[in-house]
Length: 226
Image 1 (cartoon, helix red, strand yellow):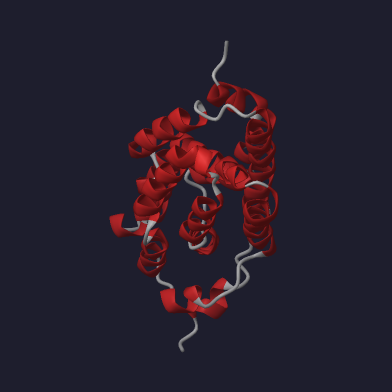
Image 2 (image 1 turned 90 degrees about the vertical axis):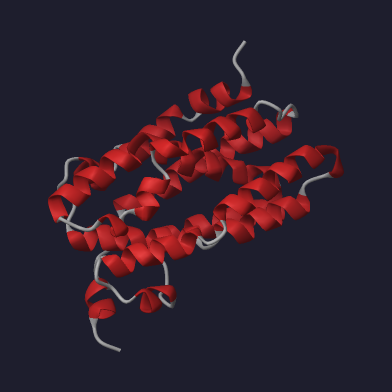
């Protein structure tokens, strides 16, 4: 019998492929991503990463007392994720953009929709649905982050300090995925399992759309002097 984590992987396979088939991911892995595309990717990464800790806090506050073990796990996630948005901003600065302008910018529509869906799920539907987003972001990073970082750095000749976000979510993140799998395998309520699978499917599509619609139109504006 498959564990729930294995079921989650199997039941979201098509949606995962939609994400991985994004042309921009293909160009990144092939070392064909432009500097402005990498900057644009980091800008959208900043906009969704800055919501991770607040979302986790909201999840923790809504978990039932019968799942106290899960609240404790969420607390561990919060400790791990604190400040990661600043890593992304530092990468952006290493790519030649004003990180304070990025901090005060607005996300693209695809990114805004993913963030909104995450908050709606946690606040209105079922806080455990947020683990669908964790599965998508961590699972995808394990598969492509290191390879993409190496290819982008080689082609664009950027310094190591421009890749702290990607490299922190690459192969070294394997322990996080193992921790996540152990948590999912303790989720035994069918309604919670169904919600996590449903949300993972949606997040694969929403995250994929960030790559498929990524715009570099605002890069020139962000490069202008204050």
